[in-house]
Image 1 (tube, one colour):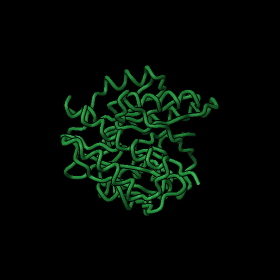
Image 2: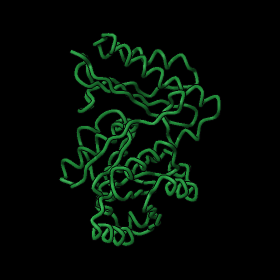
Image 3: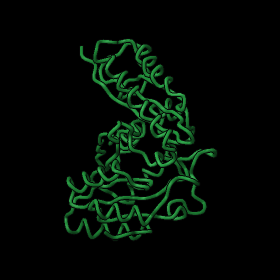
Length: 283
C-alpha cells in the first residue's frame, strides 16, 4: 500500500493506474476504522482492480460546538488496517492541502438536506458535499462506496453526483452491526461500558418500527411513536429525533407506501449516534 499526502501524488498514481487500464474503487473516510469501513474497502477491492481510501477529518462538516478536535484519530492503526484490507493507495492530506489559504468555494445540495441531519446540524451537508466533490475530482474513481448508516449523506451524494454530472457510480453498502445490533461507528469509542449497553436500545426500537410496518401498520406517526416509546425505556439515551419518511425523497410520510426510511438520532453520554432501517411496504 502506498500513502499519499498531496493531491499531486494521487493524480500521478492515478495516471499510472489508468495507463494500465485499471478500474478504481474509492472509499472516502474520516478514519478511525472499524469493520464497517473495512467492509467497504474489501468490496471496492473485490469489484475493482484497485482500491483508494481517503483518510481526512473534514473540518467543514463540523459545527462550532461539535467534536472536530476530539474526533478519534490514529493514523498508524488506520494505515495498518487499510493495508490488511487490500487497499492500494491511502490518501491522507492535511487540512491545508484540501483547503488552502483563500479557499472560498462550497457545494450546497438543496431539498434532500432540508430535514433530519440537515436541520439538526446546520451547514453539515455543505461541508460533506464540498469535500466529496473535491475528493471525487482528485481521485476520479470509477465507483465510490458509501455505507447506509449515514443514509441521508448517501442520498445527498447521489443527488450531487446526478445534478453535477460527476462521472462516477455511487455504490450503497449495508450497515455493518455489532452482534447485539449496534451500528458500527467511530464515535462508539466515546461510550462508557454502561452507555454501550444502553445504546443497543436504538436498533431494538428501529426493529420494532419495522416489524409494525411488516405486520400491517400504515400510519407513519404510530410507527414513530412505537420507536420513541422503546427508546424512552432507556434513561441513558436521549432522543433527538425519530422520523418516518419516504426513502428516496426523505419527505415525511403520514400514510406509509413504497420504500420507507425509519431514522433516528440520539445522545448517549457525550456520543451522538444515528441509525436507520428501510422497509418496503407491501401493497
